[in-house]
Every structure is written in structure tokens, then in C-alpha cells.
Image (cartoon, one colour):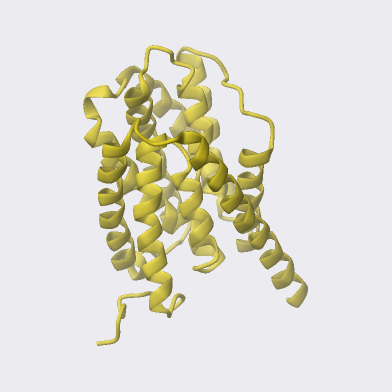
Length: 257
């Protein structure tokens, strides 16, 4: 049996799977420790390792495990009132987003990811919509709609929930993790309904889920003990480089086509 023979036909090289599994671990550790950054890093890596049309659905399936692991490890810190209002908005966002997903070309997803990464790293800081039930419903709808096209809307939700000053850092990470678990679950359902066939990708997704859980364990242990300013600087330039590469890739493919 060939190494990594469980890979789908669209991704024939074992090193591609190895990188995705590795960065699932790294991304989960980063998000568990800092509440932000891991999802963006993972989708940026996946974006140039798998076909464009598979990037967001595969990333979403992997992120379910990463976020669910984080939420379960910090379960007692979750604010369930926020989760309830977020769920109502998320269902609305998934409903409207599902009507758009089916008609977008594959290259548009890759370009959306690159643009979103550059905005989160170099654009103006996102301001929270406010506090209270209305804010959580609206943010749930907007972020769930966004995640269908840019994959990782964690920075948006973290910004919103961080304004709930009664939440300590553990509460912020736990509540955001629970919100994102629900959101990525809805995304998987939307893409399956739109025709994406998950079966060939399941072995890779499961392997990435397992490595992501161990990354979450590591990140949770490191929570509060890492120099955040160093992490932010390195991540900013790494993500920027990947985003620029994705834009160039789209341009080359469309010019060649």
C-alpha cells in the first residue's frame, strides 16, 4: 500500500496531507492559546494544497473538531446565553448563504480568502456591533454568511464576543469555540447540500481532526503563558505572504485559462 493512499484523487502527494495534518495541530494550538489566528493560518495553507472548490468545505470539517475540542476542554467557561442568540443568527446566515454558494466559481472562493486575510491583517480594526441579544443574532448571521466564502470568520466573532467584559480569557476562547463549532457544522451541511462529496476526503479530515485535538491540548496548557506580541507579528507576515501567493495563483490560472 502506498503511503497516504487514503488521499482523494485530487490531492495525490503524501506531503500535502502531512502539511495539512501538521498545520491542523499548529493552528489548533494557536487558537487555543490566543483565541484567534489558527483558523486563518490553516485555511491559508489548505488553499494552495487542495483544489479551490474543496478548500472551504474541507477546512470547515476540520475546524469542527478543533473548535469542539477547545469548547469541551473549557466547557465550564461557556456563556450559553450568547450561544443561544448566536445560533438564531447563524441559522439565518446559513439559509441566505446557501443560495449564493452554489453559483460562485471556484476561483472566487480562493480570492475571497486572500482578500479576507489581508483585511484582517492590514485593514482597520473591526468594531463590535454592540452588546446584547441583537448584537449576537446579527453577528451570528453575518459571520456564518461570511464563513461560507472566506472559510475563517473567527476574527469577526472574537471581536464581537471580546466586548462581553464579564468573560475572562478562558470564557472568550470557550464561547467563541462553541460558536464556531456550530458555524462550521452548518457550513458542512450547506456544502453537502450544494453537491460537495465529502467521502473521499474523510480519512484526511479525521487525521487532521485528531492532530487538531492534540494541538488544542497543547494550546490550552500554554494559555496565558506566551508572548502575544511576538506571535501576532510573525503570524501577520506569514498570512500576508500566503494571501499574496493566492492572489497571484488566481491571476495566473485565469490568464492561462
